[in-house]
Length: 451
Image 1 (cartoon, rainbow, N blue to C red):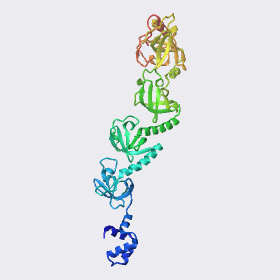
Image 2 (image 1 turned 180 degrees about the vertical axis):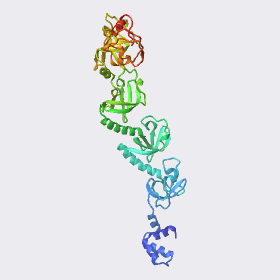
Image 3 (image 1 turned 135 degrees about the vertical axis):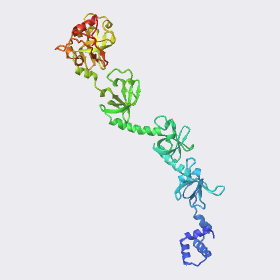
Image 4 (image 1 turned 45 degrees about the vertical axis):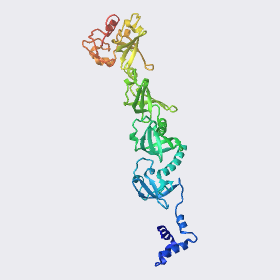
């Protein structure tokens, strides 16, 4: 009697009862009992009935019963155990079978060949996964879903991602910016969008950049919605361009236009900020439709014009430096970032054809404030009226000392060299002994006061 026949006898409950009752019966009698129990069914037919039926291409389930270095044996209830060659275990190359499956594990496999030339049943675990994966991926593609997989290989032009099948992730779509070295991505789990799917060509193209952009868009929308004009925010300068600087606010970049970088004139944004600088900015405008943020750096700084207006009065004498001459007069810097205009009619008591007849760029002199227009940020100055004397502004009284002024605050001169800081740079003062009115008068035909 064969092993198979014995197995059938053991599996039959009635036959088992017969074994118990007839303890001394021979094996031949047991076979007779089984044959009687089968009725008209032959023993061969009964054996066939216990075997799983399948065809090439079917997906079957089985239990791992043996693991070798080059193959895995799977019991699927067939007359022989199925063989899964190592290359059919995973889409990864050169894998160790013991790392993919374990003894007693139940796995699915696709039938490649019911009987090869050696009579073996050949199965494929990776093909079963492939078929399952295609169905899931097709549904995800239809719903614009996300796939997640392990990066298993760097190939020419990109990465291979294990998503149940080999998904190709082009290098240009790995990140928001071009990635030069792809090796650090191997072994990482990445989330991607499916941008191309063709089962006939076994082609799946993925994009991690599309996933990141979608996430970034959601974050941007939330960030913009919560951002309000007038807010003061810390940030880091992310780039400097000709027309301004971009500042990373921690969720999005905002633009500080060159006109909003400083209260002073800015030749180029790089003269004010550099990439990596930590700054504090005020939100000027949030454009939700265009996803743009306008920022101001100078709004968080003290307004030098306001400071000047608060600390000076019309009629005071201030010390300044001629910065530029124009047909209608000259500009004099009287404070950090503060320039006032001396109209040509205020150059001297006599008629002046051109400003060059009275002053030159770089020259330092006393001028009188005759008007301050804070709203328009304009200051009108006069050299002519400074010659008439007047009250010197507080900062210069501190520099020269009380003994250089009379009881009304008029400058009466000093016999020592002082330091003036009208434009932030130390300027040597000449020895003078004449009153301010006399010194200023000399500017028309002789020397100007160098304070």
